[in-house]
Length: 164
Image (cartoon, rainbow, N blue to C red; front, side):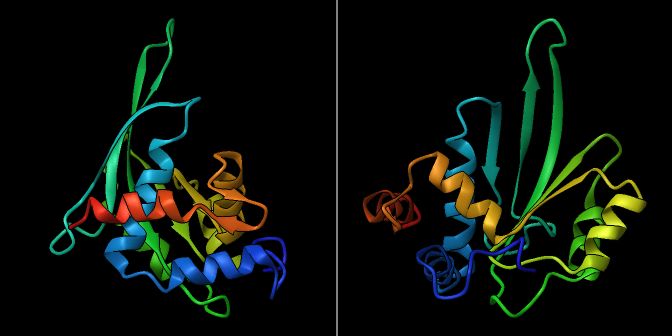
């Protein structure tokens, strides 16, 4: 857990708490907006509708550059969990169950993964990448969405306004 989350009471921990307070739909929109900003990855990503979404929150594809020129399709989950509530194997298995042959899974949370959930992904060879709260913070810092320990409110507001 300690390696997956920023120290309790830190500025980064407070940012995760801010994200956790968003509605599920808002958090999904923020997550997709973060992924869309990854400049070193050629991709297409779409957020699913809020209800009857087929058990996943976003989908799309990554494109490997020439000479490979290969698309990797993916499905993703974005789940807000309290710092003290770990992502369990059953949460990840819902995503795994929806993957078709050749698809990749992405699971993003504000919390952390139990060792059992991590072990099942590795040992069973599931094509799923797990992003814990600490990973989310690091990505947001790299994208300069967090500066001086503060979340860029202007960016967040612009993402959330598109939901209306």
